[in-house]
Image 1 (tube, rainbow, N blue to C red):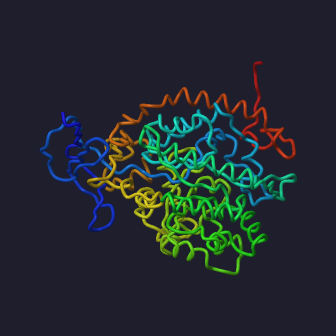
Image 2: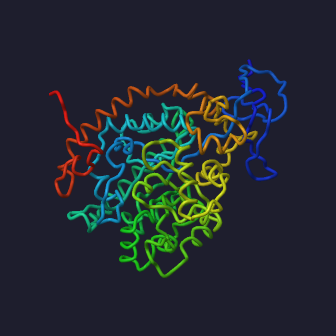
Image 3: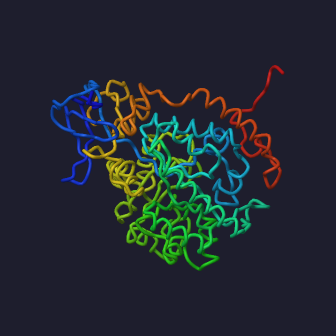
Length: 482
């Protein structure tokens, strides 16, 4: 047999046009892939076929590319950080809440499995995982069947607060160098992984927790190895003012001046640029610096929307020439809902529907993310590209009537309409169910991990508060039986 699969006469195909340098719709097209590679997209394929899929009432689209996640920790925080308040830090959850709702080893594996299942169920075929490495990390990523970019984080300092409004840093540059060495080792292990679906990313954790020397060394390593480089920056008002206090420069200007912006660079979040109205700043250069250097911004709207914070605005960044990608920084790891939030809230904050087009969001979720990861063989359906593709069920009621399938998918149906997902030509989601992950078992393990975490909260919080004080219940609770 040929090992060739054809999706025969797909009603809609989101194909890549080299002529137009972008996505186009094809109707009644055959999509053919062999092994891990797309062979052809177009009229009737009459070659030898091993597997034939009826494409009628299906849309075939490229797998979505998620360039920023924290799957080892964020799923644990469901029901905890949905609407936390931190007035001393402009309501960022980074400083008071993330350190106290901490996961353990078994919980991290459960959280990863839940997150990977959610990502596959929402059409993601490539994910960048920004995590602290631990035993079993890479293998857990690989077993899901997803294409993963392992981004082992490292830093010179940890942040902490003793009063809920002043941020302090505990610096240890020797430990930072040790963590960077371990990150390089993990990147090598990812690139050598037998699954063939793992690769690496250089990831100094945050702009305010890394010295200039560590960032410069890390960026040089990324250039030398042709790897993507990602750092959290411009993610809070506190960070912005801290960096200006240290250097007399905005975080983006400082990164530029130490040589850490460029085509390898991804800025995680990049919200608090000097034009953001919360800062009332006097310059307007950060956005141009990102565009001129070819730097990507990883936009993760949901985690910030929970704090009343938004990018100003997605369309503004696109028009400035900044390459945009999308990530799921928090739970749920529903990438299609993240895309919807990015579009709707950009228009809300801009007070006009003209801020962006749906295509801007889809590009960020596909070709923009691929560009950020320095790849041209994912995020598109074209001969020679990876066979990472998604089959959307057009008979799902939320997709009907089928007039404009991408809008219906993003604004209405989301993951309900995702039928099958292929990564490297292998089916990893069938009829909406992950084939390599027991989601129910992983969710039960995650629930147990959260209970273990809650027992430790008061010992980690600067004021000794427990989970009920930090994250009160929506309703008063009365237990009727012991």
